[in-house]
Image (cartoon, rainbow, N blue to C red; front, side, top):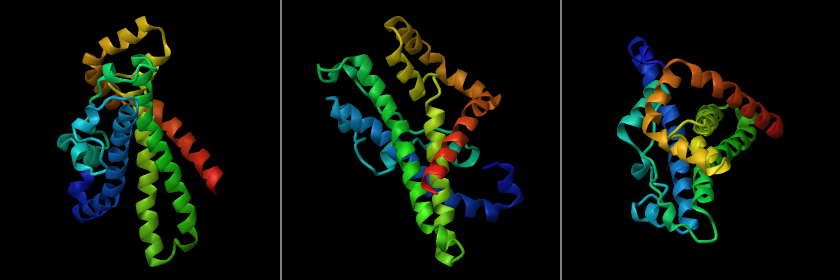
Length: 217
């Protein structure tokens, strides 16, 4: 949501913010919960000990990151800490970290798919008062979840895609990716504010939305 809209139409800005906030809270909360839950299933109790195995949004939100998300469309949640040393011995730390990273985007795509089903259910009533409200709430739920999934799949540290890639390539390449993580936020900012990140993930997100729409409708 462009910041200049806040100054040109503050009432409209607040109205739009109230519509997108539920979708944003759901997308971020379920994304981080999925990371923690998979880590827990693999034997790491770190997310549980930090109170992250909950669907209460508050433990998952980073104040600055959430405000940035709501106002500028780019932000972050509080990362779920994972200790791969605690994983069950029947899975390698490398594979475990890959599965934990994959869980967040997978959850977002599942929520988007469910949202598309809900949209199909309410679409015949879209011209009624309650139908308009339902569509206005469901559309951002679908959009934010697809965007969050695809964006996080970019193979740039510290995004989930970098950990997934590290789990697929030889150990030497994986170590290089984790080494670059200290510079990842700077790299990410450059990609976002130059528009490169958007040029990469926007067509993919549109393609996924198109596929979901074709399947459901």
